[in-house]
Image (cartoon, rainbow, N blue to C red; front, side, top):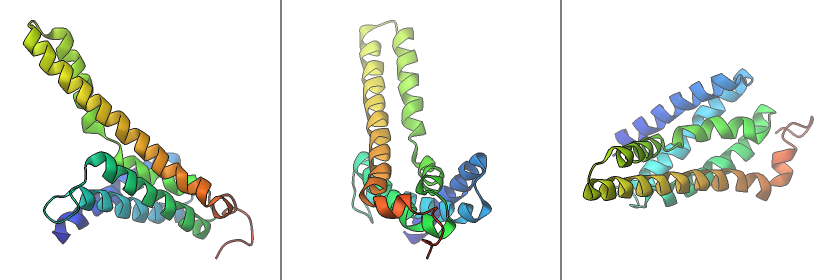
Length: 166
């Protein structure tokens, strides 16, 4: 059980390091991004797991994990003297629902290529299900990650001011 959670956290941290390297933040930010991504993604993995977690749907688990990532980014960004968004976005990107987007476009292509009503109905169902799941996950990521920035406005917007770092 713990091995799966730790492996998920490690892979999310590696992805966050890659995503943060693309935007070229100060080097002191990269370990914070990796830590936040590891915690958030592992939390989502645990929340979704039926056998040792809460068994939540991916949409609800993503919302909770995105809120956690947002809160961690707000409270850890003063340590790096950077805006919360610098830590937030690379940490959030490993949770993007790539497989759902892939299956959405695959379903749309198969709808166009289908020659029977039954095949079209099946692929349209796949297109609609995966597309709506993908959109809901993305909305939960956006809402969950940005809500802490506005809830903890004083901390969030003063992270880069001199003399406010702990």
